[in-house]
Image (tube, helix red, strand yellow):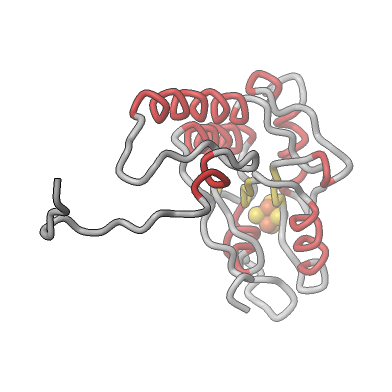
Length: 193
Ligand code: SF4
């Protein structure tokens, strides 16, 4: 049987055995082959993992100003953040995956917040609680960062001065929905600098 001149010549890939059996990634399929059942299973696993993450968020333990009092009230018995699995505030950023920025961010405090955020492991999320954290609030002056999203990526903004615990709970539920839907974090404002 002769070679058909119309068929494209496909070069052999010498790395294919390594790529197919790489232990650092999911097994790859040869180009052009699709395993839809495997994709379906991985999608379902991802959904399960996202659901688990959304129901077990551990906030970093710190507050910046008056909004922090409302954040503490949200965790106490009357409003009971534990209903949503997020009552375990962690004193170490290494053990936290949620930062609730509760209060105004001074220019002096900004690098500290950024460092705490950087020390949190991935995946991680941020809630800007209150007018000050979201946009500077009434403190339109040189000492206050006009929105914490200038230094870290913010997933959910909660308005108010101060926001009530119910408002923070609503913002928290919005974040849970976002995680369950697999919506990625916004771009890091410091990444391009
Ligand atoms: S938003 Fe209001 S309550 Fe919250 S830190 Fe600013 S001034 Fe205080």
